Amino acid sequence: MTDPAASSPGGDAPKRPDEAPQAPQAPQAPQAPHNPFAPPSAYRSVARVAPTSLPVPPPPSRTDASAPGTREPGTREPAASGPATNGSTVPAATGTTALGRTGASAQDPWDPLRSFGEPSATSPVGGYPDLGRPTVDPTLVAPPVVAGRRRRLGTGSVVSLVVLALVAGALGGVAADRLLDGPSQRTAVTLPAASVESEVDRAPGSVADIAATVLPSVVSLQVRGGDGVATGSGFVLTEDGYILTNNHVVAGASDGGEVVVLFADGHESPAELVGRTVDYDLAVVKVEDSGLTPLALGDSDGVAVGDPVVAVGAPLGLNGTVTTGIVSALNRPVQAGEAAQTAFINAIQTDAAINPGNSGGPLVNGQGEVVGINSAIAQPPGAMAATGSIGLGFAIPSNQARRTAEQLIGDGVATYPVIGVLLDQRYQGEGVQVSTDEQQGQQAVTPEGPADAAGIRPGDVILSIDGRPVTESDELIVAIRAKAPGDAVTLRVRTDGQERDVRVVLDEATSE
Image (cartoon, rainbow, N blue to C red; front, side, top):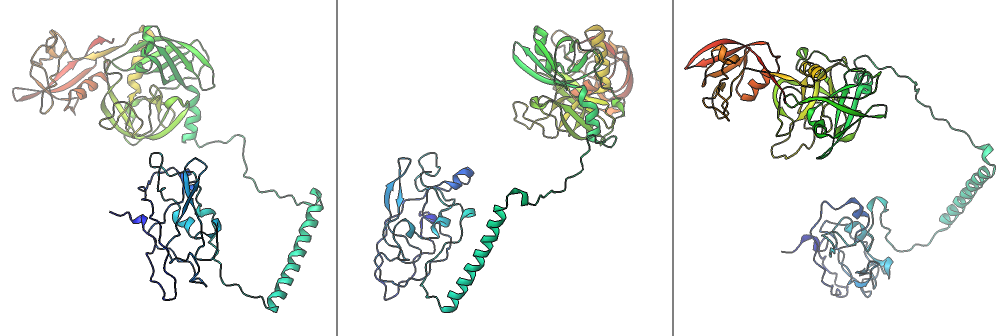
């Protein structure tokens, strides 16, 4: 099948009786397929190729139709090959054109525009055009000048030209006189400038005001461990150097790795790992600096869907990055951390951009109070690793972070609440089911544990916790871990088709 781009634009026009027979045309090289993704630089230096089939205005009629080398509109003269600068050969125009001119200047004046952007007939590398002979950029080309029949100038035209020459000469004399007067005669021009104040006050509660308050307390961390270098974010908890971050950020330091903290003012300090918890994906480190500015931990129970929030951190190592969004949802069951150290989080969901490196940074409300610790992002199905924000970020609620941080600073370890049952992950149906079998030597219901004391038995189905329905095991786990040991919860339980409410007082387990 013939490539339409290889045919002459406009086709062959019928010959006039007084015209000489048309000279035979050399066969044209086959066109390479058009490359719509060629780099823009190729548009300014591509080899001239055969014209496309788009209609192009034909050149004006010739005065001598019988001149040697004549051709019909839309056809080309046979081209000879000449050496190119890159070692290849490119077509060189020869003979006489339809306009009666010879040499390189005799080529069709419309050809540069016809060939612009078309692929080369021979593409030496990967389908890209030959760069040996530049084409013409249409943004730099004036319409082609077509030679026509010469006319003699009449007397009036001569007089007009003389007057025009005199006027141009007078203007040139004035311009030269201005230039010779020197710089002292130049007129100074001053453009109006916008008023700029050295200190600009932003409206209280604006993003700029929040950023100015929060940024001095946000840090980035670099952790060198056996698995390489990890980076993340954190923020100052106390004036004497305690800093909160995610466990998965500093996990490499648990085996003797090194932690370095970079502050907003540019100085660095080594840090010591105080404590960490896999179950909540939180950790505390300490630097020897004093007089630091801590961030206040707000009440995450007071957060509502739609509240504006600001995320601050060091995504991809870009320290002090601020992004904004809203609270998109609450109580999202999220598994965070590494696969072998999964943390169950009753998370705050936000559409504020959170990217790799934001982990451990604060999510703040309109008052600049921390309501969450940025910890995880969702990725499209099939993504093997975190690639970036898609508007689904998750943060650990600040109330949970406060309780865990206080335990890590005071004891070096953290605890979490349990009800003393194993859940059946194979169950399909309403609610979640207590396992009927032992798992790895552990009984389905812990003897004398909170659930056993409340009368829950293997095979029972738990439908809700404190009136909040549960349909997945993760939902029940994160709802319980959002509580504190010693808290009481109400579970809706179904046993042999009969439903009842039971009160369970949560027991305590020590985090790894």
